[in-house]
Image 1 (cartoon, rainbow, N blue to C red):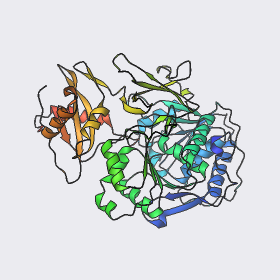
Image 2: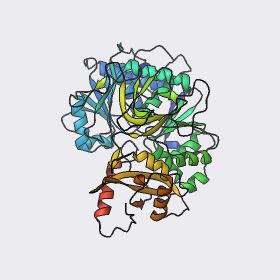
Image 3: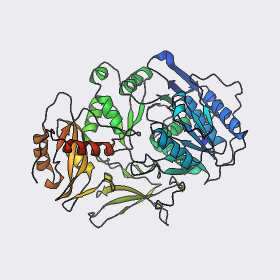
Image 4: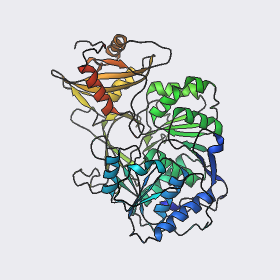
Length: 510
């Protein structure tokens, strides 16, 4: 990698500039895909940077993007940062009112958008339509000069999903994510890989991989958005070797039984699972489908970055459900609550990737301590060998009859049942217990289990207070805009089911 100080300048044209950088797939047919070289991506980013520099914006001015994945999107993000401005990727799945809130909150001076998103934009902001792909080769192929980027200059402002209130703008510096790229290249070099990205580029999971792939001089297959069938076809058609995904994406892929059976997926060597917990049953299914692929059970946050854990320095094998051992460049500590057992607590981390802060949110307590530790809100336990295991979000925990319940723990237990593909547990209100757990379950294809049998299984394999008082079987789970399970929707569905006198689910008395 070159020695750029600006995150937008991570492409190194000294390394085979004519190698394919991105295969931009806009549909299922091969004719609709366009191969872009590193020289072309760099030139496109230079065009964007020069156009923005000609407007004489003040350094750090926020420039937003509202669009699905494309080469135009990638080049525009790079160009914004090269111009010394701050890129603000906006969740295009937000409703118009929330899009307007994010644009106003960020103070964006301009928004780049694709054609479908134009009507979602407020009339008060200046807009520029992203060109449709395939893009022509720029006639002016000058790379352009990247603006100086002091270490604490903001490169990106990524907005959280807003599941617990209004989305928060997370300010990330050039230096922090150049460090992320350089550190990840040492741990997981992608130079000879062909990565597949279908998760949205407004989310850290996909955007960080895009930066890593560009810095590694790898080839990336880029889908506009995720659909299980297109994802499977893209793996085979473009012989993808390196996948990154949120677990529900892989679970949806596994539902396409007939397509998988007729598709050659043998090219896959690595699957990096992140942004949400991975269940034991999902790991089993992945290993069965792709027996030669290595599965990375990863952990990271927008505020703290994706570099947190890695292998044990002594070579001790990572336990099956662990996210790993602390990375040598990251300091970790567990902040125990009054009811936490020994070696369990909320994870706090310290690394060069930690955010600069939240954008104009005086109402939110700053989660970084005076000694530089970011408190994640995620509860972990640590075993005797120093490996960490995700327990659940502290915010998701609820109390039932005086007992703390983490939905993730109950889900893992239910997914040990051979007929359960996925489980999602949410609380319902109860006059006596305060709250009680209920479960939504996706059965494995071709296998049968009823609610009574699952409750009996839970009572046999976990403390009685954890067993779900109602079990409802569904074909799939509602997903939030980040492709994680939308627990707010499930809570509303549980409430509606319980209020319906025709509900036929089986309940057990406490």
